[in-house]
Length: 325
Image (tube, rainbow, N blue to C red; front, side):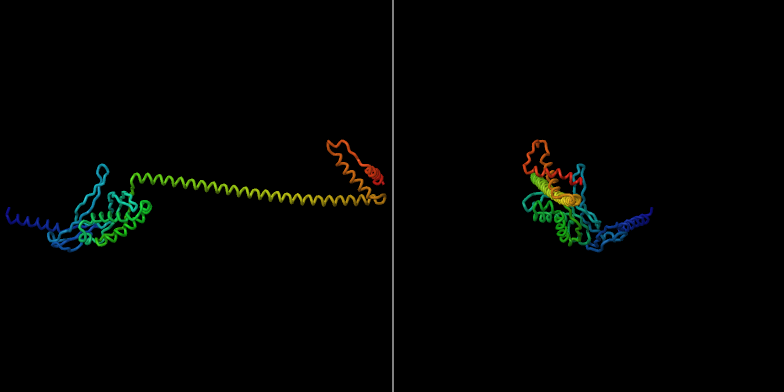
């Protein structure tokens, strides 16, 4: 084969490889920083981009990856790549020891959600962005927890998350990073502290239970007393109403008896006034009623009448004559 043909083939292959190396396909939500002769040139967008090989070179960035081994332990790896991911990224930081304001050491595990908003700043303003974010999160977390007591730390997660997000977002702004959310996964005080807190919590629950029981008994006694009071009031009202009705009935009966008796006396008087004195008749009738009451009962066996009563009895015999006439 002629040497000229070989040279042409080699040149053609070189041109093809050279041209192919100048074509860069960027995926959606990714970008690449291109430097020309060591200086920033442009930022590639999603799709097909053409650069000049050798003269234009992508600037690499360090990225953080977390994987688990066979035992389930998390292993953090740092890898250098020329693609910058613009999607929201979550960093699961390992447990770290922090000290609260009341000098209680505790372990805290945090999650950080952030997103690269300016790739140029993320590349040129910080050497190792993931490592810087991790260290900044750890120091900020220590500062925030150091201002709180243990009880406040356990009950104020939302407050801690909000403070961390504001501080980290402000600090990472010059790196072109937006911190969207910070979450505390686990807060683990020492074992003796947890035992003491459990005892305190159990004692507090017992105290609340006793208070609730006492309040329940108090309310029950109050309700019982009120019920008894209302019952007595109702009973007294009933007795009062019954007494009033009995009195009204008795009064009405007396009135009716009086009317009936007056009517009877009137009729008797009319019947006997022509033949005798009605006074004697009335005295004799009253005497008979009284005598009947005196002789009622098992113990009334003997009745002594005064001498003057015999005169009255003599008038009884005249009743027959009066009524007969």
